[in-house]
Image 1 (cartoon, rainbow, N blue to C red):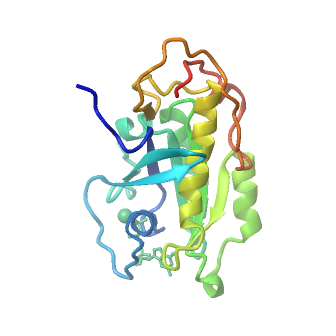
Image 2 (image 1 turned 60 degrees about the horizontal axis):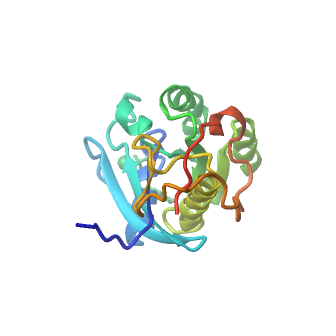
Image 3 (image 1 turned 60 degrees about the vertical axis):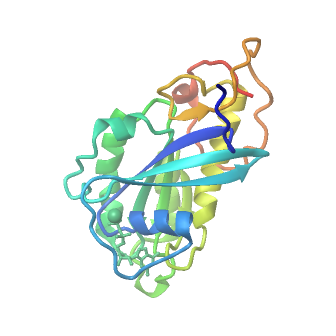
Length: 227
Ligand SMILES: Nc1nc2c(ncn2[C@@H]2O[C@H](COP(=O)(O)OP(=O)(O)O)[C@@H](O)[C@H]2O)c(=O)[nH]1
Ligand SMILES: [Mg+2]
């Protein structure tokens, strides 16, 4: 029996960052289009899914939210390991959440797959009056660490979809170029279409709109192209 999917790829993302920075809210805004001033500190790990269309393909995004664990930075290895996209969140009104990025970065560099794409999100952009971290500081941090960068607001929805769509687009381009093998179980991105045994490399890594994605050796794993 052949499974029928209404999407071509499944991509796994993980959210990390200090408690209160808005990870759960960003995920909720993305998956449900809703926001709540009062959120619960959930124990364990939650995840949300949504199918998006990007560059002519339907991609099911599975985003893991490290609820309740950020106080201890004890996100389990398996969540890092299986993620093709790592979304670091800080709160632009909370300087400590920005300073703590270095600690999250140390964990992520050690535990994520070599090809995982890092994204930096300065959340709560609607609270301009309370801003404690400038846009330029966030952008510089992202540049230094080869990350995509967004300032966003889970409250107004500003730039929330863009985070996921740009990440998905970047991943798709890497899969199409053969840099990531979407048939390998541990890359964090899975192709749901049957594998073409004749597929070799490169079907043009088009439409990489996003800027400072990480390059170099981290993308060097080879693989069969999908679809
Ligand atoms: N003004 C504003 N508040 C936000 C935003 N995102 C989250 N919050 C609030 O910040 C608090 C912590 O959010 P939450 O999503 O639980 O953070 P998490 O611990 O990182 O998952 C909650 O009171 C949210 O309502 C945002 O973009 N703007
Ligand atoms: Mg949370």
